[in-house]
Amino acid sequence: MPVLMLLIILFGALPAFAHGGIEHNGIGWTTDLYIVIPIALSALAFIAGSARLLRRTRSRHGQRRLSWRIMAYAAGWLTLVLALLSPLHALGERLFTAHMIEHEILMAVSAPLLVLSRPLAMLLFALPGDARRALARLWASMAGGHCRVWLRSGGLATIVHGAVLWLWHVPPVFDAAVMHDGLHRLQHLSFFLSALWFWWTILWFSSRGAAIWHLFVTMMHMSVLGALMALAPRVLYTVQTTAAGHYGLTPLEDQQLAGLLMWVPAGTVYAGAAVTMAALAIAQSSRRDADDRRVRHA
Image 1 (cartoon, rainbow, N blue to C red):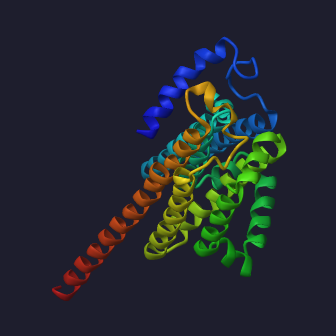
Image 2 (cartoon, rainbow, N blue to C red; image 1 turned 45 degrees about the vertical axis):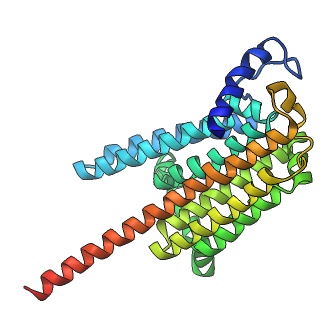
């Protein structure tokens, strides 16, 4: 229902803006070079590196695995474009509900898809050989010792990701980000980077049990934050909800709908990931038990 309401608002709002919105300009694609250039370069680098790796991969199995990684990156990159460059981004500056969808795409869709693709090798292979080896050595030195432990700590990543989420949703801080471009960019960057770190540790360096726990904790605190916004008896985000009336919503309804989106759909993503992890753990345990039985009866 919240998603349906947003679609009605979005498609109903676009014609209104075509005839002059609150700022007398239409909702179009973002042309902010601080956003456009990194996204464009990431695509070009990934394409160049993937092409080079595909040429070097001889086995059909290896090519299939690399192809799946390329598709995961492409899906993550496209959702990133949807969140940061499409008209959704411009609408999010005027409507809290759209802004919430933008953030949830960054953290719960784009980030895990990009992490699943394991893009570091492809991005490195876009560079000349000497530069690639130098960066690999630098990364190895930075990721050694205690730093490696911290970088791979699912618990630390969960805490930092949660702290970033709650900090930016303090009402005065959130409203300030809406009013200042620099803070807005920093908000999106911190959401995205902390989410990348969170999913990276969850998917590649945590045990199944630990991953389930971190996902459950994230789902719970995110749901609590969404519920606080959805059930608040008054408007907390006064600047972000100022234009809600142009879309047929009161400021309180805009805030409530944004809270519902964080509470239910976003929480469902983390719950679904936790269930998937549990299913993989059960399947792995079943295979191990079957192997043990075969060994005992051999």
